[in-house]
Length: 324
Ligand code: PBG
Image (cartoon, rainbow, N blue to C red; front, top):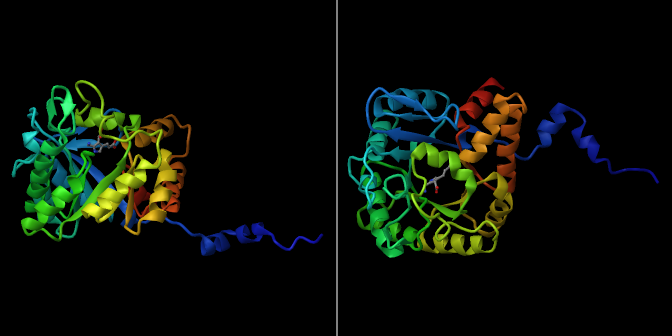
């Protein structure tokens, strides 16, 4: 039999491959996470995340110039406060560290999309994402504080709030609070599908936010499940989310794909700290080709159906794209 179908014809040379290829990673897909802390003149490395630092506001200003000049147009802020307490009050202080970072960044770069992670765990002395009584998380009482945090970020000029706490009902609560205060235009990017993942390890070291007791399994999702991702996403859509997120990314591309097919909202994949650390470590040892492995992984996230990629590799990717 004569062979007429030859898929290999489509791979004949580089220009043909470029002509027909479907998925790409571009600058406009990227969100760069940034850690900000109190103090002055400091830029502290995070040992398990080479290339990622804690910035004080002045060093952040310098760094933002680099970020902007590389063509990155979206940043996600995490705050490292000096003082933590049982109710995470630094999270919703009008002049908290993240609120000041937003103000400063929007002043220097009004067109930079500023996103604020909305959660209490970096701000609570016990390291949990909500209020705690008798060792249990208080869902409904936490909502009020999350809304206050989101509102204070909106007042500072944030474009998008990204609740990562996983309390039930937080998207609706935050939407209502924003709308009642005249911030109808602030978007909500919901960490809709957030698994209780060991891949967050380096982040918790970076944010000093490991829970002092217990774990986050009563509010973050069980990675042995897939169907409840539909429930979580469905609720967030109903409650008013503008953008959905799946987190972590690389080990959860089946979930990314399922959510992309089911919901017509922009979808974000968060390639978390552990994913970054693994690639950095292997690259640092010369065991993998860093650029190729990172670009392959990011393209896989696009292929699975994500549009937005949150990655600590954003600046490296911007440099690699520039070089092409
Ligand atoms: C806050 C939050 C976490 C991450 C993003 N927002 C930590 C956690 O839930 O433990 C993880 C990000 C990463 O690992 O890169 N709740």
